[in-house]
Length: 314
Ligand code: UD1
Image: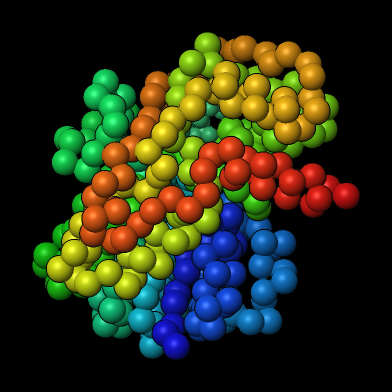
């Protein structure tokens, strides 16, 4: 049995990781400051985890949280492109300064490996698709810059201190428990709850933008594989975590009409600043080095997610 520390354990991805680890019989510790995480995501597992309410910027709390830990799954972030455009200082503090604290604490505690929630936004709006890890990053938003900077810190701590780190560039992870309630929420969480409530969703732009939407179970599996992979294959490296298929927002809206019984039209609004147009991953490196294979495709993931939001309302 290994000890895992999950930063951002109250978030949608962090709490999903915790559930899977507990099912596997592992020991789970978690930190969250509930800036974007939610107490309710932890309610059913609180008795089984060592939870500490703390901010990543509190280095002493991070050092204490890393004591006796084998693996750190660093998920905590302010995960929003538009929020970072409005508040680049806040984004940098949470997404970069916070990461450096986690790394220093993990290094000093001699943690075996840190797996980091990096972002596909690092690629920027490159016309080349699919995006592969050897491409030169070209981040647009402050959020994307912060995520890329943290990724480089991961690599630096491997090179300078020998701390094993793996960065997973997530491509639009979605699924149950993703917060739909903020204007900065992920598009699928927003659209699904709006459409289940009979409210009209709004597409920013013409709806022809596309994403490699990735169901949560795939991201959870990738994190655990990144802990287990031999250091020669994974340490100091960056991997795309996605499905290798992209869908447009217009197509997604149509699929959701079938799944939610919302029959009204969608509204179109102005394009959002800092957005990229298309996102599609080449996942061959994760397949080859981590043994990753997407387990749940987009349609099945969307169905499961709609079912979860529907049942959690009643
Ligand atoms: C998302 C993640 C980010 C992650 C990145 C890459 C969220 C909140 N953001 O960014 O953390 O690093 O993927 O994995 O999960 N849109 C609408 N209507 C809405 C909301 C959004 O049309 O009501 C559009 C946006 O303008 C954008 C697309 O949907 O074109 C996706 O937006 P969003 O879900 O916020 O994700 P990303 O910006 O791609």
